[in-house]
Image (tube, rainbow, N blue to C red; front, side):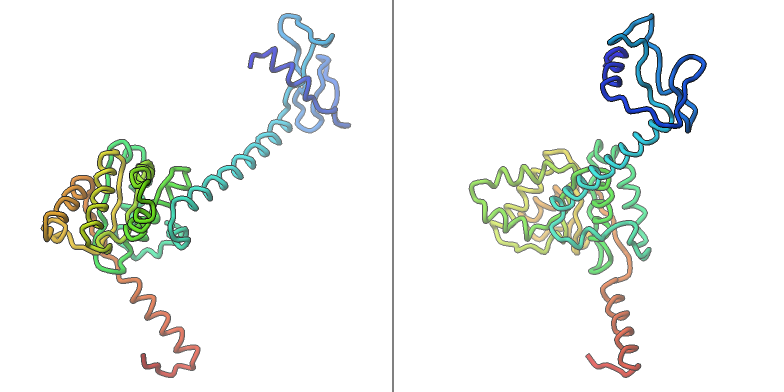
Length: 284
């Protein structure tokens, strides 16, 4: 919008003068609070509707506008983040897997933070991760922190598992290709608990189709698994070899070595229950 058209807009939306406003020596209206002009003369002697001046934002008006615009942006941002989390998480509990809620017991968590922080380079370079380690060490939480951090930046992420994917594929026989294409459209796909799905011929074929399609999409993939790196590098048969080879080609293995938080949580719960029952021993 040119200056002249902008002036027309300002004239059409001009506000009433405030009681404390005053006219300056230059003949323009000034704000009684910030002492800045609320009017400006048209350039080169132009006039509009018989007027030689047009409204102009003083500092007070600018600050009020910026405050309203910031509030509007924040509301739209929160609505978009909420939409992404509804769409991207298969379990509402995943919303709580954030860096802010981290208990600090995973030695590798700084890698998750760096992965999210360097997302532009990660995405461009198509850098994926295989998060492996013992049960309960925080692999899923690690991946969830990345997902939440990216969604807060309005980057679309899908975090799911093959048990759900295989169920969806079985229920949508005619739309399998469309379903897989939709999975591969996410800038980041996270497959949780890889290796826990049923190992039928059909199941393995669909797992390969998803992994291979993601590979061809050239978008990053994060996989969490209880399989060891040795098991991934030495598959038991050809169908598994096809899948594992693709994964290792796409993703860098990262071993998660945190304490088994499930056992720790169980111990803490036991201690709390003992206190509630006056310290009496409980046999389980």
